[in-house]
Length: 126
Image 1 (cartoon, rainbow, N blue to C red):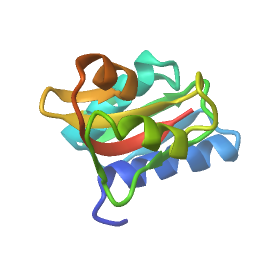
Image 2 (cartoon, helix red, strand yellow):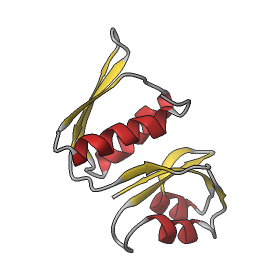
Image 3 (cartoon, rainbow, N blue to C red):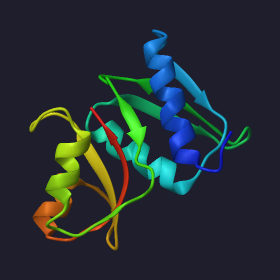
C-alpha cells in the first residue's frame, strides 16, 4: 500500500474489473475517495458503494467501467488547460470523465468548464 488512498482504491477497482469480479472491498477510507466514488456512481462507472464503519472499509459494486486511474502528479489546471488534459487522458470527446478538485469541491471536467474554474486533477475514468 502506498500513501495515496485514491490511487490504491482505483487500482483495486481496475484490477477487479480485469479479473471479471463485480465486488471490491477497499480497506482504507478517506473523504476524498468517497467524493470520487460519488462522482463515479453518478456517471454509472460503479453501481453502488457501502461504507462499513466497524471495519473502516468500503464495499464497491462495479458498473460500466473500462479504465480508471489516479492522475500523478496532481497537475494544476486553469480553466483553459482543462481541455488539454481531457484530450490527454480520455479516449474520445464524449467518453469518460476527469475529476478535478476545485475550491468549490470535487467536480467533473464538464462542470468545471461550465463554472469557468480550474483546479487540481485527481483522477479519470471511462
